[in-house]
Image (tube, rainbow, N blue to C red; front, side):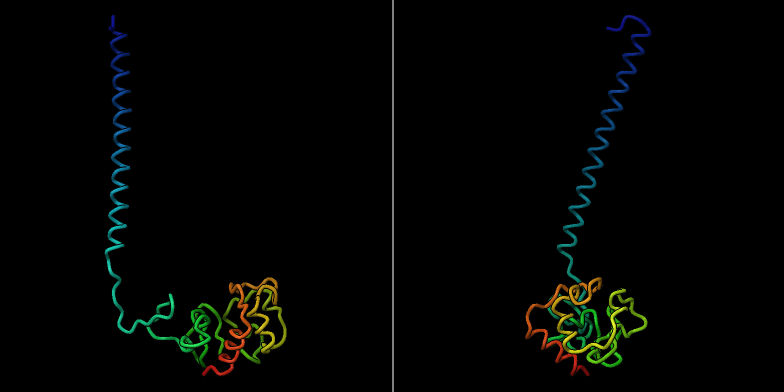
Length: 167
């Protein structure tokens, strides 16, 4: 029991501290509950919302295109995601591959080739393309090409043949 005014003040201050701590704790619980409800609502919305349909949207594996890229229906299907293969094709994230067989390495002026590819000399021969497609980092150490490599010799030969015939 408080005996004097100072004891009563200390008891009142202790009570205030306890009430403030309880309010802070309950405020944290409320904030956490609000965040949990928002996350659950967002997940539910994403799972129940259907993507808008795009007329003419075509799919190649996991990739979706408004128009089917040239080469997407054959051996070049993995290439055309990043590269165009036709004459005057659209710019994509990688340099165009039309006419690559026999062309100078690092031939496209606007593309940011790796230093290793910029320093490479000569033209792309079928043998060079085969080695590059097998393991870009072994053929050109320091290349920035993210392709892991294509171990299947027939698949590489099909890609090179399709590149030679690209429109």
